[in-house]
Image (cartoon, rainbow, N blue to C red; front, side):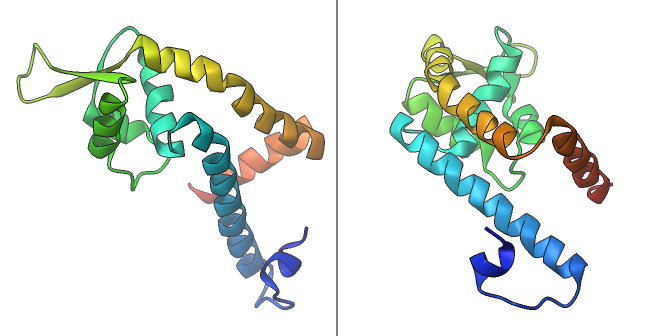
Length: 150
């Protein structure tokens, strides 16, 4: 559905204003889709992001600061997210042996198992993209979005 129909607005100042609104609207739409998809698994998209970061480091642990640097949502409180994942037994915290002030975090086998269980849900959203746009269109969109953040 077109942005105009989605937000019930017929005119925009210009194409750049429409683009900015379209990016924000689509980002929120994607976020809401993730929330719905992850809800049955009892985690948020931000918690999923932490688990993916930790799985990428597995079997090594990394600091909460390193997690924060890699997060998609830079406004997320990584420490609070880790606390919630510890309670769910999806990650473990340990004091860093080299620097006692630093806390390292590692994914547990339960966390790895959950990511494996969620794999089909995540892949199905990627398949939905491939049904609507071509690989070349995805590449162009990625290049444009990267260019916007330069």
